[in-house]
Length: 92
Image 1 (cartoon, rainbow, N blue to C red):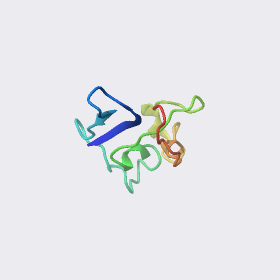
Image 2 (cartoon, rainbow, N blue to C red; image 1 turned 90 degrees about the vertical axis):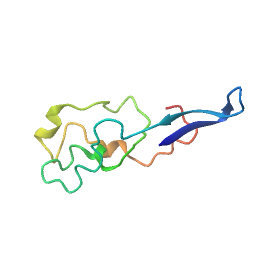
Image 3 (cartoon, one colour; image 1 turned 60 degrees about the horizontal axis):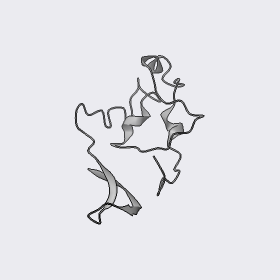
């Protein structure tokens, strides 16, 4: 379970405002593509249990079944989304 909070805002009970994320509910895909000979670059989002990224207008926002057609050069390479950019106190 993860909690994302706004350190600068409290609710009427004095608690930080935020959200609780519970990954793993439903079908778990986590780590299914590590060292995959067929998936290669097409499902890099599944290498970790949870990712949070800030969307940029220049980035594509989704994928398609066609992503698997070229596993070495997919239509959307999720690795490019994971650039180490800090999200501390950012509007997600």
